[in-house]
Length: 297
Image: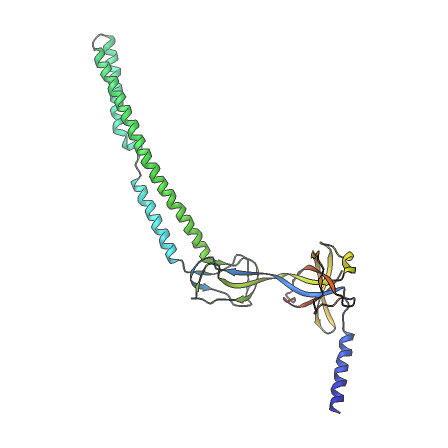
């Protein structure tokens, strides 16, 4: 008697499910764009402000890797640049005394020229004045050249330090953990105060607002679909209730594959099908990754 009641209940359930079966062109599961965020720096993970299930914004700061030594190195290089600037010679000041002597020598030459015109000076005095002016000019040129070489060397040293500072600033920036996309944290792989290396996974995040329904169609349905086509996607809320969403076909496989065991189409199961991806806006958050969905073309 007991077995009869159980069989009757099972039969009733099967009949009920069959009555509530929805007919659609194809079925599949929902996928999302998933990103594994990895560390770009090595050191102690001082902070990671997230837990699984958190909804993060794009470019949101979520933590950092210890960067004390990098900061101190930057300060050292900046101090070195200040010291270099102190050593940098001021060329006009350094040659000002020679310039003053040159001005006096040129003035003296003009005076001698006037005296020579009045036969009050000799040619030797003029030659001596010209010789002194030539020596002073050469001295000025030599000192300017030496000082310029020194300045160039110090400038190169400064530029080298600036490049190193830029490299450290880049490393400091990479010590910060910045979330790359808006989405929901699916998995967290590490905890605060653990040691991380460059490339070590920290957490996985998925864009749950823009999902894809990966559905499968038979060869006879190919002529009904094309990329960019608007379709209607459905999710089942209860045994007799579905909700629809607008969707857009974003990809159609160019190769046939074996029918997944979990996929049913409106036709009888066939050996080979084609996969299609349909972009869907998860505006109300009801669609979950891995949930089954249906589509009408």
